[in-house]
Length: 410
Ligand code: TTP
Image 1: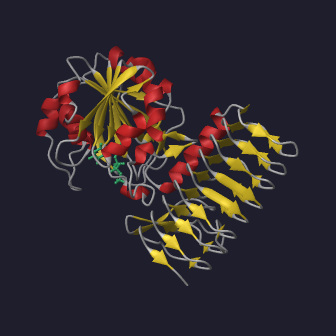
Image 2: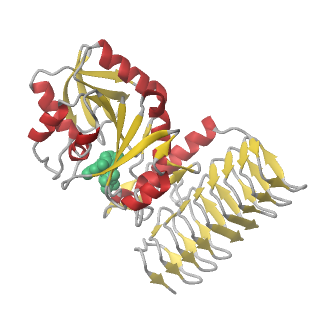
Image 3: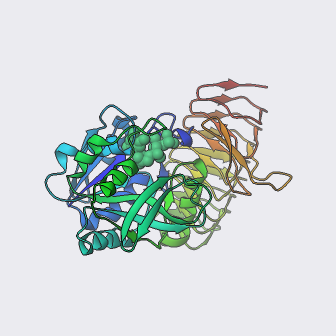
């Protein structure tokens, strides 16, 4: 069986981290999001077809042409938006058999795929869809069922409970006939959920499997922190491949990559994952649920907690990084602090595609893009975003979002 993985989207809700790259290559727990998708599909498939468009060269460079020895074919999304259009783009490559489709920006585990294939075969179905029960489906497609088959899909049904569409499907090549008849939706996209409704209307059998494991849809910045915490708390193995100087304290589980040096006085409380060739300490405090990438520097008198620091970035002197995401190749000046809690203890709100959204999080710090230079003694308000390639001068108080490529001074 082949797998089609959808990775052509612009990831606008994840700005500034997607200012210059597709979201599926953003690293969580030091691995690209799409790596988890491929890994969990891998036991069931012999080839991956990845649908690309936005910043596709970066995706192809990050993944290469095989995964675990199985070939990856890249296909460019046909003109037009939406998941149905993305799947249609793989038409020439899927062959005559049924194939799995998964969004490239979700996290799910192997049991889900196993059960989905089981339901598809048991029901001798024409398609199958993975679902999970949630109390509030306002952000989901609701999958309505009758017995062991799906009877309809309703997009964003409001605050009702039920089965949500998790973005993992099985189709036969016949789906392309139905995609060809799928109209553009109200939001201007060709949506695979509309295709499924057409199939059901035409009497096709759409099976479903109920997934009970961990799942996350990486749509908004704080979803990266949620997934990071889940992976570190549930999947991390204690493994030290770097050098830990005498006088450093490591509370397992902590993974430290080759070439990384942890200097005396560093106090690291797992789960913490640190990549290769990074410099940690002396005298820093790295608290649970933190991922630090390759080639980073976390220096003297720095505290980091519940955060993601991507490759080649530095928090070198007197910094506090809490519940924050720092993109690649970004530098924090000495004394720069992220605030992660509002004085009124309310949930932190974040501007997403021009609208203020409640993150649902009590604690959320800064979301800083790639190649950012932050000067000394900068204070960043909770939930504020700094666009990639920006420069923040010394002493600035970042109390509003900074667009990409901007210079801000006092
Ligand atoms: P979305 O998360 O709905 O879209 P997006 O990735 O563009 O993000 P945003 O809304 O923040 O801009 O996409 C779901 C999945 O489908 C995701 O894996 C990307 C993929 N996709 C495509 O491959 N092509 C498309 O045209 C769209 C809209 C999505």
